Length: 138
Length: 110
Image (cartoon, rainbow over all chains, first blue to last red; front, side, top):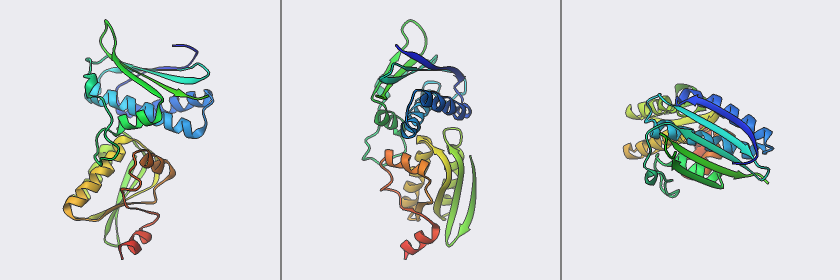
């Protein structure tokens, strides 16, 4: 975790807050120097990550919180997402085959397509899961 | 997001407006599948969609698959730039029948 922090926001795991989160992410990425096309892609990927936490980690209950931090180290933007839900089965996270036409698995596919790196894990010694993503900007 | 449904030239045109994200996609899905449940051909008008995520795209995929099973016609019209870029990322821009307008779709139907 290096560089300048562009954003730290804590918000409820509620789909109705996603629009506001997208606005925060867009503004932070613009400050990070990303072009419009990259900003839009990042906004989509972070939205998908938050949606997956709401749907799968918190099981759509509407309860729980998410922390999102964005860092800029000059070469890439780092996105750190953390929840406080029960540990998810990390082996169950995966994109669908892009050749398949089915409704599920698209969010993870979008994240993998847009971000240069992503890593999921359990928060050691505490409840919750994390997702770290990186996007090269230089 | 808001939506409206109108009848036009043998289609139920489901017009979606605004952001189709996790908070709105259940409503979009219900509108699309509701029309198909009534055995109506469906066109989803995406010209006023400012943002769509995977849950919104999943609603379109479900509509497409349901229409296929029921041997009904399904397609997208007026796809906004914002929606098209997401459909391309999902590699679905060549799967859905996409036309600029309903008239173009009707001409394609022959």
